[in-house]
Length: 190
Image (cartoon, rainbow, N blue to C red; front, side, top):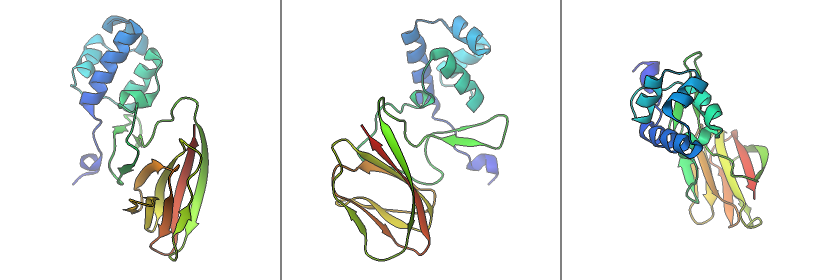
């Protein structure tokens, strides 16, 4: 399988619906959006119909014109209380100019504050955390090793590159299952 085959394609139907909805919300015609973004009107029309394969640069240009965050094109306006994205999965968009792929893991809600931590853990007893203040959500990406992460009621085993988000206003855990386990933890406060 080639490297191109391994890259995930963007969720075209979600992007198409989002583009259409955001263009209408902004009160702009296809012609005006394509002009401002420097795209052919036919290209924008194809994207809104779910055809074509937009590059990261094309989508960013459209976001600038529509004055929306990139995550909104991928339908990231809400998420379930627990979300797991395995390595190699998730809504990805490929750059046309470099060997680069951006995968949205979580969009920051308006007014949120985020603290970012690097975690180094070794096998042994799990790290049990009492509930944080209401509305806190934690996001974890495993770098190396394996770990059991999430709510105390439903922790998930994660491998390198895997992502999870979960409510941290309930008891939650982190337990290294391999020596040398590392992770990035983002604590999001409303």
